[in-house]
Image 1 (cartoon, rainbow, N blue to C red):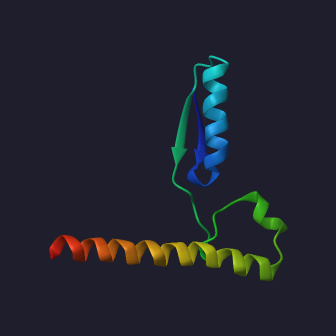
Image 2: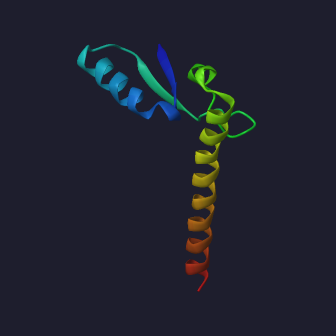
Length: 82
């Protein structure tokens, strides 16, 4: 038996991992990649509560983090080539 959680639920994963261990449950915790909407926002039932403007702002967080990640990776690649 297994239970599946998305990476976006990192805090929940930690709690579930401890729960499974502490209750000696014979179940595997499988952490799967986060699925995203077209605008980059992680798929979540909680997003239905966001207003249009809030959703637009929330999607900017993922876009900004992705851009930062790309910059870091590019810098690392250039430093290993030098």
